[in-house]
Amino acid sequence: MTPAPAPYAFLKRAALVALFLLPLICSNGWAQEEEYDLDFDIPDAEAEDDSGFDIWGQAELRTIARFLDEDAALYKQKFFNKHQENPAMEFRFQIKPEISWEKGDIGAYVRPRLEIAWSQMVSGQSAQLDEPSEQFFKGDNNWAGQVMAEEMLLQWHPSPSLSFEGGKKVLKWGKGYAWNPVSFISRPKDVNDPDRSREGYYLGWADMITSLDGPITTLAFSPVVSMVSDNINEELARGDSTLIGGKFYMLAYDTDFDVMFMAGDNYDTRLGLDFATNLAENLAIHGELGMRMGYRKQLIDSAGSITERNYNAVNLLLGARYLTETDTTYFVEYYHNGEGYSPLEMRRYYSLIEEGYEAYTTTGSGNLLRQSNKVASEYNASSAGRDYLYLRVSQKEPFDILYLTPTLTTIINLGDGSFTLNPEVSYLMTPTLELKPRLTIPIGPSQSEFGEKVNKCTAELRFTYFY
Image (tube, rainbow, N blue to C red):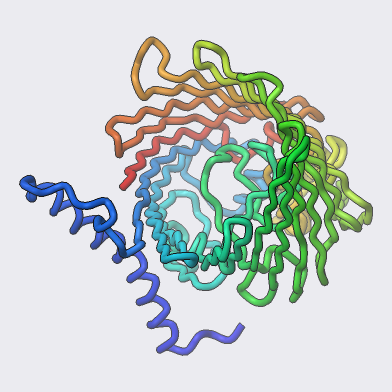
């Protein structure tokens, strides 16, 4: 790609910085007014604020200690020629203001993100971001930083039953909590932290809704169109493309149903459906079924030969949520990843890495390790296996300790029996400050998914300030 001219780069950086300073300046100004102006009249509700602006957000500091497993296959693949501190410390600071504006039937919303990180783990890698964005410390082994827009869109609501949106948006298709196999036009969730906000894609979107009498009470259709080109939605397709899709919604017999589709050039056509309903006041179930037509799956054997298999991949998710009288919440999901790898395919991959590492330590040749890296983005991805079980148990305010919620999550690869344990505690220290310590402990035998992870254990302490 041709580098941006200097004046353009300066204006882009200035605009991104202004995007962050605006809410900070505004919130600081309001805070001072609330602190010192104690003698005031209660304003008329209609005259209180007619600007239409609303600003809020959060700032987050994360301290992470990574205890590395130097015998794991993925550690050897990634760091075979790089010394790493063990444990490796990491610090991340992130600020995400959210700004909305509404005037009559039009509105706008933007959520930029500024992130600065320092890590003892040697990386030096930079991700390709959608515009507008800016990366700092490119090529640096320890520092990383970026400023970008997670969401940025315009809205038009000409009537209660019709609305249009355009811009960068996280389109939330599907009913699942940890996975969404029908989320065709959104970036995947972090299965270890599904509630974390994500970056959206650029798209145009409409909602048309009608209400009916009888067992079917609501019908809706939501068409969507999205473009893929350099630095815009690049992860969506294998090249330049115009994607067209949509979602049909129906509420019948107190059950939500969705049918969705997406198609375009350089893109595998996808079809899907989902449902969600309450079986009782404290018990809800949901499910998703997605099909990816003509999926091309890369396979590698223990000798390093790469082949491709073409087939229609079927992905399935079934889940339930149960709330007890004592405020204990049980959340369970089964996920079949039709695009994933079987335990045998994963073992062949790990065997290749082990043989490659052995060759490197004895002869200095890194050919096999470099060959394994050609498919690392598929084999090392989160939820790269075929069948998973997700179980999450949380207890609200145990022992009458206000604002405290301990949670235990486990994710099990049903194919190889490996799993991860994620205990965490969320404590709201003040109405605006949350403290969340958490551990991530992958457990499993050799040549299993969680047994070959880079980290033996990850300890994290997260402070989040809401404003």
